Length: 289
Image (cartoon, rainbow, N blue to C red):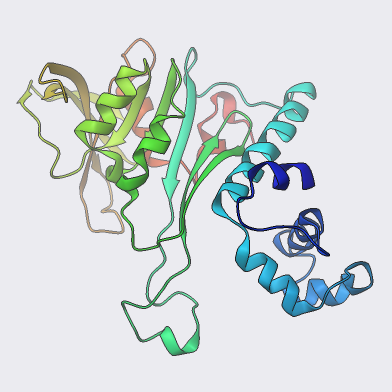
């Protein structure tokens, strides 16, 4: 932990309080052994050479690059353990490595300093994009952003840098841009992304029934859009007519994908997207977990 800090910290330094000690303390809080940083500090006070105020200052000063590196380091160490024990899940899409990416956004009503709770423009905690490897059930990457008001799209270049050949990225509609879809394809990757209302479809083929998924009737059609180089790109558009409206009141959801029918049926693609976070264990063949 301390070597990781030394390799990635830019401004912050270790004097009396080691980064590894902070990780140990926060681990107790994250695992809910202690309810708060203060309670964890009181339980470990004899092993820490500084006051509580210094702990908070250390936490406040940890840089995003250090946090992101800690996530990658932990995933690499834990991933090797999962593989050594044979604990990985079967592939969601045989032949492709699935990656699920999503972000968090804090609202004005989320917990903040009391003096800022009524101010919509007040400062919020930072946001992050998180990448999940469903075969290992581990968060492998975290792309941090200290500005909670920033658009997720400002972080897309960092996500595209992680795309490798035969990756299949499952994302929500915020990722549905010509630049992102073209970027994934340019890296020989695949995508399963909900269509954004503003995404420019150039042409559409007939909508054909494709059975049912877990939440409604499934239809499919071929559509095209113009890539960043102006060339026409053909992909699949999968439509789910929901049995019950979504939380946002939508009765229909459309998903864009360049995954071939050989790799996944339209119904399989629909289930992959609709249950990408809450239903990941149920998506594995044979009902694993």
